[in-house]
Length: 211
Image (cartoon, rainbow, N blue to C red; front, side, top):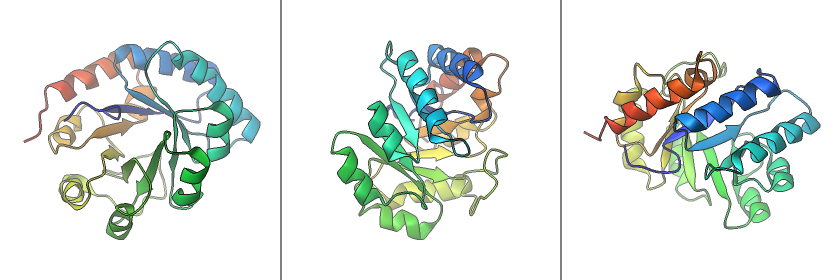
């Protein structure tokens, strides 16, 4: 897998309290995580801002970008490095106008039609969801699988981040497709040692060149 900022992309577990989440993020970075996305879908905006501010402070000592899930307003308030949007969030054209040209903008892609449309959108990368079934996302519209991921890589010039059901048992096969990044929640956030989990995953990525 090519080395990119998206290589090992941690998406936080919104069910974890702030102290736990900060411990996970700190350890994950020590283990090799290259990007962090804060996800907060079910709590109030103030809680989201407080969480984002705490993580931003933690990341200030690193070169790891901070991405905000869904909320452009929170990203702007925090001067985060970027935003990741879903298909039902703010239109990416408007998000790009608000964010300006220098912030990262990602978009979740759930089917082939959306993938085709993404080539004409002002985004920096695609989050291809879901590669496999996952308990952290209950409304999955499509499981791409390895074959679907490989095909998606031929349909766009945009970087693709694979997400959904990825762990140490299948990350090597995902990396060998040549995908630009791999996003994980449970495999790191729920590990007994997030640092060790991230380190093991980083090692597996390094040992899995594209076929």
